[in-house]
Amino acid sequence: MVGKDLCLFDIDGTLTLSRQRITPKMKTFLSELQKKVSVGLVGGSDLSHITEQMEDEQLVETFDYVFAQNGLLAYKQGKLIGKESILGHMGEEKLQPFINFCLEYMSKLRLPAKRGNFIEFRSGLINVCPVGRSCNQKEREEFAAYDKVHNIRESFIDALKKKFPDIGLTYVIGGQISFDCFPIGWDKTFCLKHIDKSAYPNIHFFGDRTFPGGNDYELFIHKDVIGHSVTSPEDTMQQDYKGFISAKDAYGKDRVTIYEYIGHVQESRCQIAQTKIENLPGKVNLPSFFINQLQNYYGIAVCSNTGNLSSSTKCYCLFHCSSVEKPMHGQCSIRKDSWCFYQRA
Ligand SMILES: [Mg+2]
Image (cartoon, rainbow, N blue to C red; front, side, top):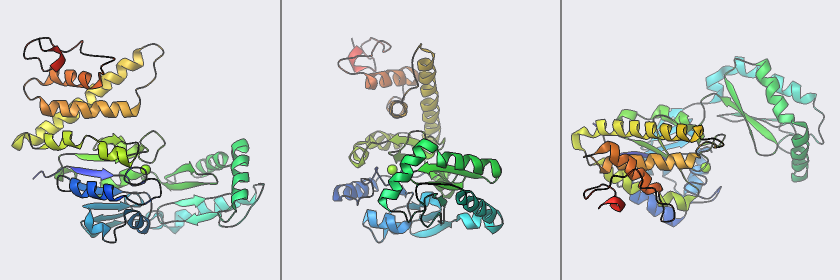
């Protein structure tokens, strides 16, 4: 049986300002939203940090899903449903040669300073830091400047890839002094392993770092998810929830078919738009936020126009991408009962 939609939210920059606590306004927004849809959190940090940020000791019971460390620790309605660690996943056999190589490589580096804590072993990743995480602020900045010129971290990663081509790790340079190593696929899409997709007509995801290289990107573009890009917690509260919530109950028993159709329309229309733009001389790719916006509008358009799907979806999207300064109703039909308000004769 198909139930309510599931809305997943990134935390930092989406529900709260970066590393800050949730506002009362956002708390109210989430509890109102929970009356209409299922809600889950997908954070990169550990559970204690998320609990603190969300100011809720009963966090795992409050929400339908809570995914800490991108889902390595997973809770569903208060019950622990998944726990994974890099040690459990890879085993000492594979890990130790890797760590040994890192230590050996770093022992040969000549840097402005070297302190302590060169390898930090966390449950979901290994953080490698050539200057050592116990360096002070000045040493940190010195390393960052040195790294910019000498590409210390980049060359280090190249060496690791060469030495361990099949180890199944991926590497991400973050911050000023270190890089992370974690198993391929252990990004935010990891949380989807714990979700029964057939239980939800749609799974939405809202994140702020949805551009390539951002930590929300993989989940944002995942085929099983409708991605929404936000710019701030304030923007998260302004998203078009009405559109997909109101659309949800419009089709009764045919709901699944309609939703499949919506997914198809969203995807194919956006692909067409992208191809057209790419073929224009001197044009770059459509920005992801625009594709995202288009997808939302196509989805809403299908839901609101059962009578004449093909022309109305096109029309709806153009209408919504139009502005007073730049009207785009050229493709909307001109007649008395035209779907397009502006073209009704
Ligand atoms: Mg974020």
